[in-house]
Amino acid sequence: MDLTHYPYPSRRHVVLGRRGAVATSQPLAALAGMEMLQKGGSAVDAAIAMAACLTVVEPTSNGIGGDLFALVWDGALHGLNASGKSPMALTPERLPGRMPERGWLPVTVPGAVSGWRALHERWGRLPFAEVLAPAIRYAEEGFPVGPETARSWRRAEGVFLPLEGPEFGPFKEVFFPGGRAPRAGEVWRSPLHAKTLKEIAESYGESLYRGALAEALLRFSEATGGLLTREDLEAHAPEWVTPLSTEYKGLTVWELPPNGQGVAVLLALNLLEGFDLRPEDPWSYHVQIEAMRLALADTYRFVADPRHMELAPEAFLSKAYAAERRRLIGERALPRVLPGLRPEGTVYLAAADGEVMVSLIQSNYQGFGSGVLVPGTGIALHNRGLGFSLEEGHPNRVGPGKRPFHTIIPGFLTREGKPLGPFGVMGGFMQPQGHVQVVVGLADFGLNPQAALDRPRWQVVPGDEVLFEPGIPQATALFLKDLGHRVRYEAEYGLFGRGQAVFRLGEALVGASDPRAEGLALAW
Image (cartoon, helix red, strand yellow):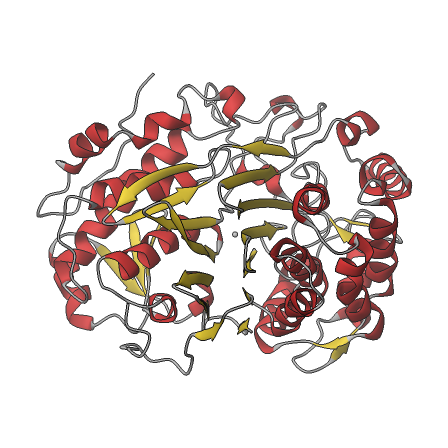
């Protein structure tokens, strides 16, 4: 890859260093990660510091009450699933015909804090309290709200301020003081976040599941109609899982197994392996879109909590199956895509030191999540239960003690058994599509990581419509329309994900950060 070549509009270049690198969607969080590295901490210390900071400085996308997934390289690749299960009391009969977007019903056990602890226990070098110190500092002293965060926060006014009910009051008091969102550049403070992060630091995360924070959550749940119980919290534990991979044109692409949607990335790449893709070639757009539609059809039909799946995750990786499905990609857009296999708001970050590399993602889903905040704590709970299906017989059907289908997926690349590094693109159902487009940019088009992130993106959305960023040529859109695709340009760049990457090239670490966010890559 040519690190001097930037064919797409961008004011960003890769950053280069030897000892360590970090990349995330918010500069203050990136600085916290670099602070850990310069204190002698590991890449995992840096990742946890950034993750904790992001719950404060980018609360529109994640929080203490969300979930987390991670891939860690230390000579081998390890996977961590720190997503929570549904309450044991949640059954289909509890739902009013659908899963509501806000309130207690879509709340599952929050797993992110348990993920921080699990990662720190294996690879942390600095004391846990020291790793959380920058997040506590930002919460206590305040920070100027960034421009993209402010845009998201202001859009959320129309969603959360109208909510009525005692379960929503504490959330609005914390995040919309004075009845509005903070504007860009305004200093926002959250003493409750600082207090809670101190409690998490002192208890090594235990308080959220078996201590004072758990008691506060359970009291509020019982008082306002929640389903979470002491047994639900105490039963939670993150799981170490075996990552899945596929070979794609010289790269090995790694994803976590279900309940996440990482298999969609591997499926789509297996389909695309049979095509000669060229940059800005309209036909290459066509086959990528069709491959993604086929992969998503299988993913939405079969992915669930692995304990309830009809198929083993490995069933998605067959090259023979990909060859069979590839034959469906022809000279016209498929009118309807059916599964073939038989029996949205998130933050992503990357970090590396001389020995360890981390790909980490955490989220509250749909921006702030459920709109439920535990009084006195600053813990905004996620609404991951929206990932469940209500279809009878579906492996992902809502039920007690289940992990829902999850959108958030960290990625990792190796080449000939050696680590290239972590990468990811956040953004709901855009995530596997972003992963595929970044990998194609690297492997097929020879782009460096910054250019691969800069490149204008497309997204398949429900109804088989295809959204284009304005940077994709109009001639390409017209070509695809002639093939039967329903193409629409979308000016809101936030819909196309926000990615980060840290790669190792020889002795150098190369960091890149997506221009669609206000993020930052740093290296030293």
